[in-house]
Amino acid sequence: MTKQRRPHILVTGAAGALAQRVINQLRDHCDLVAVDFREQVYLGDDIPSYCIDFTKRVFEDLFRRYEFDGVIHLGRIQSSQLTRMRRYNANVLGTQKLLDLSHKYGIKRVVVLSTYHVYGAVAYNPALIDESAPLKAAGLSADLVDSVELENLANIYLWRYPELNITILRPCNIVGPGVRNTMSSLLASENAPVLAGFSPMMQFIHIDDMADAIVKAYRKPVRGVFNVAPEDWVAYQHALKLCGCRRIPIPSIPPVVPNLILKTLKLKSFPSYLTAFFKYPVVIDGRAFAREFDFKPKRPLREIFRFYRENKRPV
Amino acid sequence: MSLASYLKSKLVPADIDEHINRIRKPIGSLGYDPWGYNNEVIKYGFSLTRQIYEKYFRVEAHGVENVPAEGPVLIIANHSGQLPIDGLLIGYALASREQQPRIPRAMIERFFPTVPWLGNLLNEFGAVLGDPVNCAKMLANNEAVIVFPEGVRGSGKLYRDRYQLKRFGNGFMHLAMKYKAPIVPVGVVGCEETIPAIANIKPLAKALGIPYAPVAMPVVLPAKVHLNFGPPMYFDDLEIPEELVTERVEQVKAEISRLIDKGLSERKKLF
Figure 1: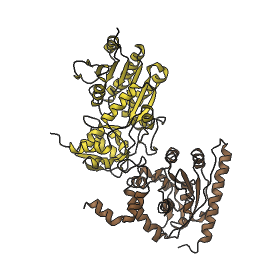
Figure 2 (figure 1 turned 60 degrees about the vertical axis):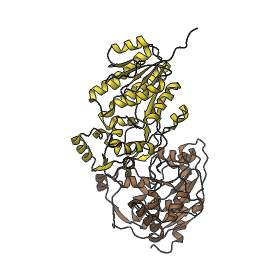
Figure 3 (figure 1 turned 45 degrees about the vertical axis):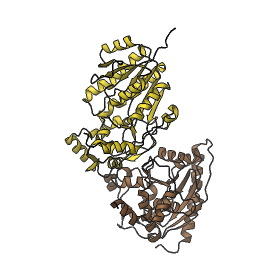
Figure 4 (figure 1 turned 30 degrees about the horizontal axis):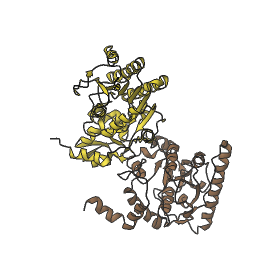
């Protein structure tokens, strides 16, 4: 009698809170291997975990050894981490290596995590941007170029190698317990900068909902690019108020003033290259993903903000 | 009682609070919609506009019942008077009507989102960046959308050109056809006299990055405003060449022209 083989999945970005939630959802039914560019994390005896640079040759050994069926690529280095050069290497060249190996070793399902930042925050953005909208982020700042290039690369592989079944997810702001991105650190802080007179509409998704979305996407091999966002919206400054943050206004006009101030201050949670995202809205339309993958976020905005309000001073 | 609720009790009468709540907008759990409309902020705007509408401009609106009670609809009007007062008054006329009121969305100039405070405030009142994608998504959401197809050509025109319709863009007609949205034409009379401009300083406008820089008195004059809503016009969604679309636009323009003439003949005096 042959026992049915459990799917073998490679999960990247394993040091992040999101990857760990995805791993926890999948570990009972799949054989997982976790890798991270930054550090090695212990995820239990049943999950081999590696700290590895995707551009190095040893990375290929993992594909030989574990015979993966699928890849969940969550290891995108965020714009707030590393230098521009190292980030480019990790995000663009690393992803290219990952996709090349996936093709070489006959992977049948790839989910790539991107970000809504690729659309770029410009004054003329319409609301409910859908997946076919142009990606304007590269024109805003050189610090966002790697995010856009990662997307372009994944898109090329999506069409060139349909058998890889690539799905690219562009989520809105992922927030919640354990999330270390820019937005989460702002909501968690006591004092949060705002651009005086600007409070763009924003969308937030709870990390557990996002993990659900990734698992759902992995399980249904539908190729394509999808926005992931709940059908709920809030103005940035209102969100800060609900999280109990004191708002610190930064002069917003003329536009060189806030850029100069932020470049001087070098705030990690309010970097100058993201200024536009605190000025103009990037509201994405997540309905195509919700329809295709039968996805409905379970955690409402109030619950997300209550968590940040009640955890201002962690014990 | 918090300061916010105290201010609200003073500034927003209970009947307005109830009236806005009765109009059920598709909003999220915190009272916002994707374009930034806010159900609480609009109550202050509504309350203030009531004073402007009834006491300052003493608006007389006819035929507001021509706007269908539900479904997508485009409200097309002539644009005038330097500031978007005409959009505000049309919006209030529809939002305050007794039977089946609706809160329409006005498409605004591309320059507003770059203005601190004002841009967000306009969004909270329901105004939306004038982008065809926005208009299309709102019609798909069954919204009533106010469009001024003349754009800045209309609002920035000088007093000597008053009540002369400028060129209409064709975009609204394509959207009306695609989303099967009826068009309700509106003739606005009176806004031309609110800020009469004698010249436009183009270099100054260019330097400031604004659409026009009128030479006018720095006051908004209390001209009496007449709004005439015409019967809805329906257009099929057949694939037709652009020149036939332009013909349809001309039909709407002619109807607005007729409604303006009606308003002008009804008007007894300017103020």
